[in-house]
Amino acid sequence: MKNKDFLEEFEILCGGFDVSSRLDLYLSNELSGYSRSALQKLIENGNVTVNENVQKPGYKLKENDIINVKVPVPKELSINPENIPLDVLYEDEGVIVVNKPKGMVVHPSFGHYEGTLVNALLYHLSGRLSGINGVLRPGIVHRIDKDTSGVLVAAKTDDAHKSLSDQLKDHSMTRKYIALVYNNIAKDSDAIDAPIGRHPKDRKKMAIVHGGRNAVTHYTVIERLGKYTLIEASLETGRTHQIRVHMSSIGHGLVGDEVYGFGNSPFNTNGQMLHAKTLGFINLTTGKYIELNAELPEYFSRILNIMRR
Image 1: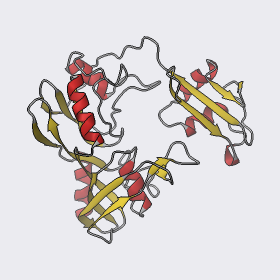
Image 2: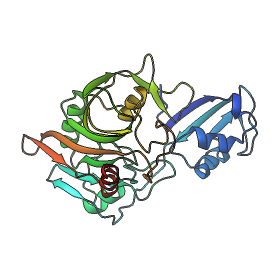
Image 3: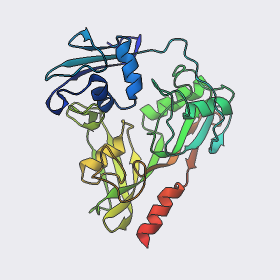
């Protein structure tokens, strides 16, 4: 059972090429979302042990060392509103729908409390966000990765938040993405039904694993571009990195994806070419279905036009 005093807890077995690595450096490579300085602070505060002993950041790891990391819940944390421009697609008394830019983190996390979508929403809405997800994630119903752009809805009230969460759980929310993937896909459309869980050897990654959570992705070819394919992907489920993991598993990793892709991208993409194009849901305020679309970001359209020429 997870300890309520900690945001996250990790247990990592060290081996192979990790031998003789510095503790802080090794953890910065293993734990995505945590900077090296943040991990050094955890180590210095005694929240990291090696074989149940507190060590210094420069401790040299050995084969089969067991590392335990506990990230404490922030005490009296205050997330500051920031005047960051938002591309608002829709807003009423219950929800706000925005087109999140590529490179923006959705909500604050340990060591990263500024410049997030939550900071921007708090300023735009004068703090009027659902409190269901607590101080770190007010109003956040679902997330998209930092380097994924596109449509995202946040809840202003607890009732709206619960309604949206229920729609996510029963898979009635429409979510469609545009992605550019490597290689020419043979089928015009197909579904990938494969369970996703934490990678057994690399904690930074998700993977298709036996015993993972059910995950289903449907895809349709939009355009074939030589060695690449432009697709639309729709989600039945919403697992972490789902589209990226599923497409990579069938030999069609996303262009620019440094974690699940296939080598360096020939384009300066700064991350995976994945855009949340469409989001549809029953709006609690009106009682009617609403569907919002976000145009492809400039960099994405520019790369497609170069490929077409």
